[in-house]
Length: 59
Image (cartoon, rainbow, N blue to C red; front, top):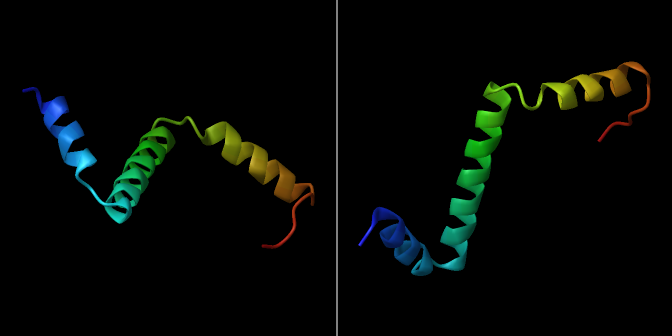
């Protein structure tokens, strides 16, 4: 059995809360990798332009 198959089987045994934790961890990992690789720079630049132009509102 391959490692991928073992992981798939382990994931199938997880409860809903554990699956949610795994999904969040994978998402956070991907965001961190994209940020480190500069993939989010254009989005950040656009957001800053919007703030400077006064086209935003407080949360």
